[in-house]
Image (cartoon, rainbow, N blue to C red):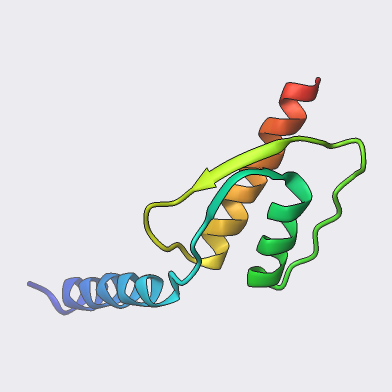
Amino acid sequence: MTLRTVALLALVVATGARAAEDANVALNFQDVELPVLAKFVSEVTGKNFIVDDRVRGKVTVISPTRITPEEALQRANQEIEAIVQRGK
């Protein structure tokens, strides 16, 4: 095994351990209005959401394991996009 391979493996292991450490968000929402999900994700990520009043819908998001704030943001974006697509 070369030094480069060892370094790459160490980086992968460290990144995986860091991601597991950061996985502290539990997404367990059943039939909640979109603004409720947006507010929660905004609080855990520190990012702002602007939800247009015309975008309405209920979502159910259940994660069997804890996820990172970034993963929560991605999941919320997917839900918002799905609601917008259904409304077209």
